[in-house]
Image (tube, rainbow, N blue to C red; front, side, top):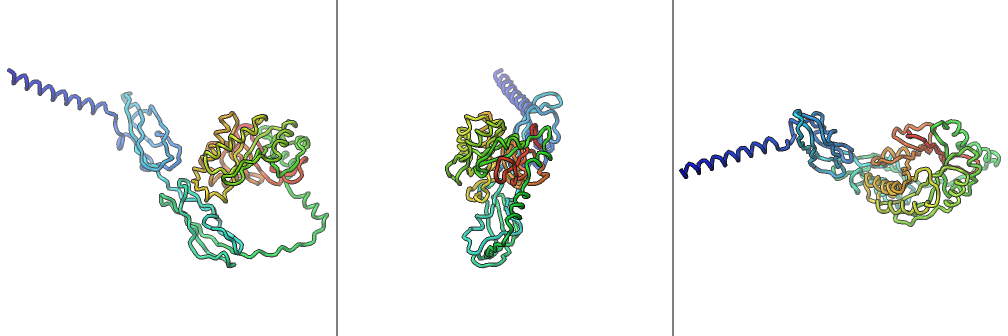
Length: 411
């Protein structure tokens, strides 16, 4: 009798174990590695791409319940889990395995030629902009022999390579030259003055060409414009002015208030011009950019700023020594702009068409486009367009930048 009870107990235990395994198998979240969905690009995802799980799934046996964003800022493999409902309307968990990869070549800022004066002490490998989207310090080398102390033309190749073995090669001619003496030619003073009057872009012509219901025409100014008669500027048709609040004195340098800032902003506001601000930066870190934004906010706190605050970073000749990736540089700009937006202002990134296309690729802020042409072919979004730097307007002696502000969504 005891033996029969023991046999029954063992049989029941085994049966319970089997049933338990069956329940686990039936209820465990499936790992959809082959049959649950089809993948794109063998689950390889480009670094810094903005994707979610649904972007990786062409077909799933059910409906997605969650669609998490994927962190693509670090290279390597990762698993992302998501929840979906199957055909029986039961919740299930899926797993996507991806690998974030960098397949973009480094950027070498070179055309077909580069010129230096005989005796120049520059280091070409450091002087020519060499950057990578991911690496802070790609390998940058010049192949070929040259002598900066000897006049001549040298055929060279600039080679840039990153940690993912992406490589960029640019062939170029290095011209080492002796400067030619400047020969002064006699010019009739009246002809010279007439040429000065003819040259430049007339503000009234810009208004006639570009003023529409959804646009406003204005200027941007700094100490380089000297004393400005804003009453005349307003009368000439300007509707707004972007004013430089200050600048940083080189990498790691102090922040200096533009000597004409207070005079410019007070007179502009007195004459009912809308005002925006820009700061000229050499920031090489997010921390530095944040400090610059806080400094900017301190300078403008007593004034009515109705237009954006712009981050103006143009120190490309110093880029190599900063040891920043292109993504890192974009994060520097974002740090400044996020800080001013936290205080209720609109942030805006300033850049030329060429640099916006090649360098400023990883941000989500409004753009102030600099492109000196009658009709820009920049094909990304912008809210302000600086169309010339040789503008002529009553109230300013000399040249000034002229801008178009788009009232709604820009272009």
